[in-house]
Image (cartoon, rainbow, N blue to C red; front, side, top):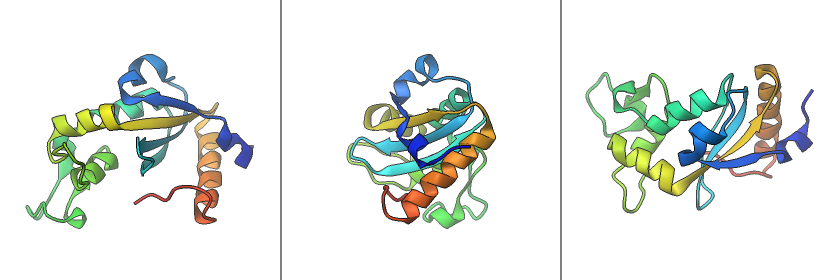
Length: 143
């Protein structure tokens, strides 16, 4: 069973190192900008595969049934909610409406904190502990 102290045992990696340094184990991941803004927290049964999906930030997985791309509520993502968040984020020097610019932003301006686990259930427990910390004000809030 996981506890809050497990949240301190983490690995920091850059998006450019995901394929070579991230395990295919399950776990919890947190994505931050270099300035400390939390972009995404999630769990996965395969950390490497999931983070590669996020790093690709594929445009064709973003879907806008109404055709009005001006508001986040109109856009859904079939694979990576991070791509949707980035699409509407403003970042100096990057046009995050473009897939290539989202990829460049992730590689140049973001890092990932990982907590590999033995099971996905253990990752869920870590996520619950993290959420409790966030709700108590002891961690950065997302969006």
